[in-house]
Structure formats: structure tokens, C-alpha cells
Image (tube, rainbow over the protein chains, first blue to last red):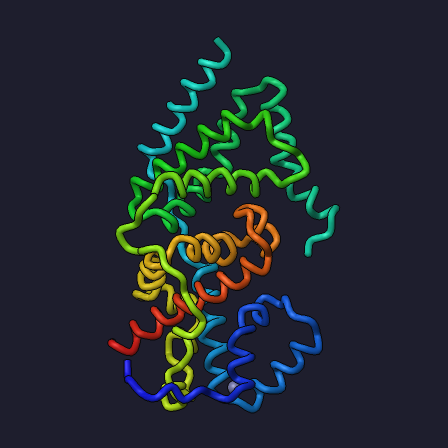
Length: 89
Length: 203
Ligand SMILES: [Zn+2]
């Protein structure tokens, strides 16, 4: 990472940056959404910011799910079998 | 927000099963295990450092569910209650993580240092279709980045974005306010995005 003077991006970009997740999740009211959309249309860095964050969320949503190892599944059912029998005895 | 009738419809299959188990059909508990072992195992893989810790977590969860199922209140979805039990099993299991020391993430650490650090071009990993990026190493990068997240942020992003719970449900599962969930979620996502970005920059 480059060490430069913290030159803060535009005030509007900062405000948007804070609310980007809520925007993606459609948790903001209509006027706020509109405001954000108007800004994003005109601001290239914020477009990139939004798209990379959206892709990050999409990646999480689509992570591959592994099968349960068979040996573990058997072990688990064995442990439950013991409990069921304990309770009914 | 799902409407109430939808909520009951979704929960119906589990609710019926839980009622049956609680009225004495304990043999049906295996059906409950069958329904959720894969989800919980994958939740464990995201939350624990090793697959064997994930297995322990799943087993502890089901044993606790068996123990406390009689106390299940039918006004919550069973799946939400299950993840509440699983979450506390996780927290008990892994007091310390190899990867992720407990720390606060601040919004400032994810702000671009200056204007020149803000790329005007969309990076390739963000412009390609999902199935293409997930085929590559990116899935591995994001899995590791999840494990690198401090636990309180990881829990939130895993419940929200990986498991698909709503903000409200996640708040209930973790006993936090919805605002708190949103704050943690945003920081967690920014952390993950940073990991994806730096992976590609050092490529
Ligand atoms: Zn902007």
C-alpha cells in the first residue's frame, strides 16, 4: 500500500460508501436510493466501488457447499441413536 | 419482508416434524438431522478453522437440539432456532482462532488512501460472470478471507450472505440490534472485498 497524505474523496462519495451495503440489500427508503443512484451515475469510482462490493456479496452467496463426510454422518447418527435409547429406556 | 402466511408455510414442514418428535416420535429426530446436517456442516466449515472442528460443532448442535427441543417455542422458525444453537456451539468451540484475532474493524481502514488509489476501471474478478470466477482460485481466496475475519464480523456475514438469513433474523439469532448487524455486515463485506482486491493486485 502506498503511503500518501490522506486526501479524502468527495464528501458525497464518503456518505455513499457508508451506506453501500444497505443500498445493495434494498434497506434504504426510495428518496435515499434515488440520491445514491444519481450520484453513482456520474461518479466512476463509486460505480466500481458498488460493483466490486456486489460481486463480493454474490461470491459469498454462491460458495460451493460440500457433502457431509460419510464417516462423520454415521458417527453423528450413532451418537443420536444412543441418546434416543437412553431416553426411551 | 416475508408476509406472515408465507412464514408459516415455510416453517410448516419443520414445525410438523418437531411437534411429532415432541409428542413422542423420537425416531423422527433422524429426519431432522437429515434435513439440516449438510447446511450445518457447511456453516461449520465457514465458522471453524478445521473440518474436524466443524464436525464437532455439528454434533454438539444436534445433541443440544435433542436435549432442548421440548422447549422450542413454535412462534420462531425452527431453522432460526437451530442456528442459534449452532452459533453458541461455535462460540464455545473456538475460544481462540489461529487466523483471526479479535479486533474491531473500522470503516476508515477500508477507505481509499487517496484519489489515485481509486481505480476507475472495474477489475476483472468483478466483471466476469460468477460461475467463471468461482471456478478459479477466487473461491479459495474468499473462504480464507472469511476465516481471517474477526469472529463477530464473520458470524454476521456468514449468516447474512452465505446462509441467507435476513437482517432481522440475524439480529434475533445473535441477540443484537438490526443496526448493529448492518454495521458489522458492511465492515465484513469491505474486509472480504479488500482481500479479493489485494489477491488480484499481487497476481
Ligand atoms: Zn462518488
